[in-house]
Image (cartoon, rainbow, N blue to C red):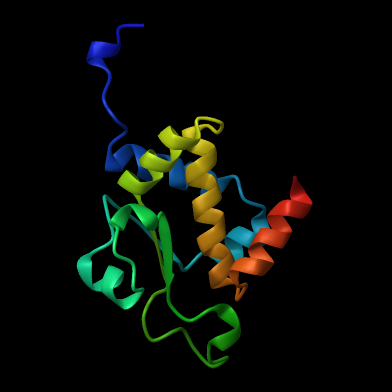
Length: 134
């Protein structure tokens, strides 16, 4: 393989991986998350980092923003769309540091983790589900 002509996956490449990972989810999970907007950025913005009290943008690979399904009013849609942010550069950094997981698998993991928050699960519950699945 000629390494000198290789480039890092672009934002569009990450978007395709995230869409593919979303489409691979079970139908009921996809249906429950159908209104979630998935956005790919290189890094979280400064306001997000400040709000989360995170100093280094490489520490955040993904973020869910919105009211989870259990908090929504049963009479209508959420006032703002729920969003999942996937951060390309921190995910690439983790992928390189780990070296034990494929990039698509890591993108899928981060996406599913953030969609878990949309379902109302906290980090410990998501980790327990992932541990049980391994």
